[in-house]
Length: 232
Image 1: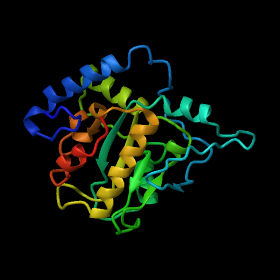
Image 2: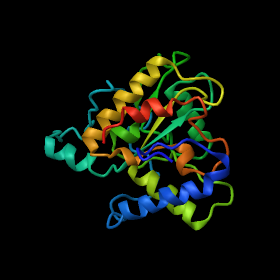
Image 3: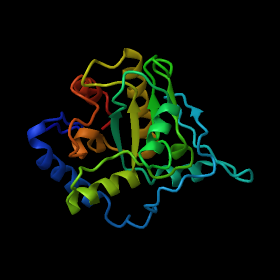
Image 4: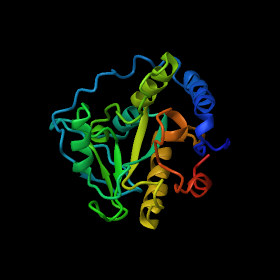
């Protein structure tokens, strides 16, 4: 297990690893249970996606009468306590493809906050922000197994409430992600860590926090490279 936060997937250690992560979040979430609603109700801007430069993560204020001040953004960004990295599981795709898949799965649209393209659908290395980021809404990206324990459900609930979901288009169990994707992911994580004050120990792979079999980002994910670039 890495001290930096990201841990490699190991099929035989799913339960013990999840317990360790749960212990971290049990402490982290103390006093925060009422901050966000569990409801996965989509905002009025569902279906609107905003391209984002990895090094600058703008908070999009949807009210015509609202002005985005430094204090406003600090208040919004302060709810995020961790980052979870995923893959889409398919070699091609766009944000709208992922949105459609989420709707087919019974979710209220795209479950991730950010998607990074690989050139097959969404342009290579392009970071696109979904409505959940623009509205600072809870995610729907951490999955539970078919017969989850109460502990597994609680962990997934907390992560979906307070973690930022990033999805790389592709399948990390079949082939490596593109160089442009990796660079964009590094820049995006760095920006989010700084803006949201997220420590390295709270940057996770989906396989770290979910007991679902074969969840991403897969064996070809460059864990050591990403880990070495995390801010403390």
